[in-house]
Length: 198
Image (cartoon, rainbow, N blue to C red; front, side, top):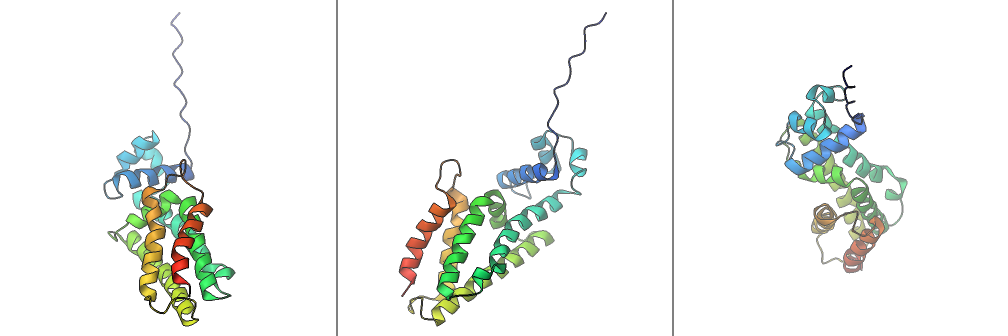
């Protein structure tokens, strides 16, 4: 009698969420343009055809990933706390929420900040990002008009510097070793708003 054939070790199945999460990791490591479906299949430990069971192609994965980052930011825009009260308080709240979203969705926001507009999907994401930037810029201008921000600083420059600081978190923050989102937001707000407020 022949010895029993060893059973193949069962590989964990993938669902759309795990496929997306793995793809974002590969996109961030290799760059979206430098990633092939073969690279994604290798990272997932499946065949290319198995990926197509979950998603039509690489660009749809990119679109879902970018929406994950942008939907978080637009939840800030839609929140009633961004619409009422002194503009400086609304601005401070929006910056705090942006830091929280960045930490909570770090790989997705990192990918968003790296897109360059090389495809229709990337261009649409960049336009949504510019829309969010315009929302923040309006808050800064309102705060300046209310006299809450020092008159000797340019509102457009304030917007760029604030979100340059927020976005830089993607380059150095390590969740396992770093501070919490609230710790990061507290430090950022202390350093920036102390100099901004009249």
